[in-house]
Picture (cartoon, rainbow, N blue to C red):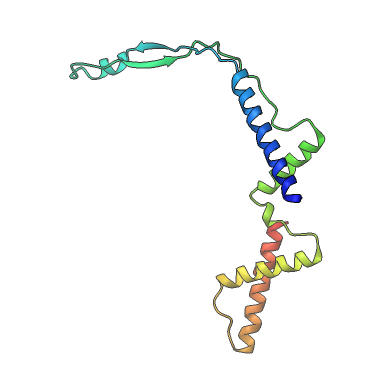
Length: 153
């Protein structure tokens, strides 16, 4: 019984779809074709600059029969408050240093500083095995990370 209902629904859908397409094709008005004019422009500067060339071919420019519309300055910032908020958030996300801001959440801040520490450690030499050299290495690493964090504020 369900199969019969599905088949009937499919036939009705196809009948409505085909009927809609047939009415769309018959009711569309034909738009008049705007013809374009060809205007020949001779480039006299090229002809004067190169006198040794015997023949200069004229260039053609296609001009439409449409009236030029004046350009109106449009504000890029939307007037609607929701759209303006989303636009400004998108600008901040696309900003160059937006990804380099220090997060406010404590867990995100900890992960951010660990990532910074890993980036700085990748540019430094390998971590030494001697205890005194390890202490100096860690001090230098923490100083470099602190400088980077200070530069981001």
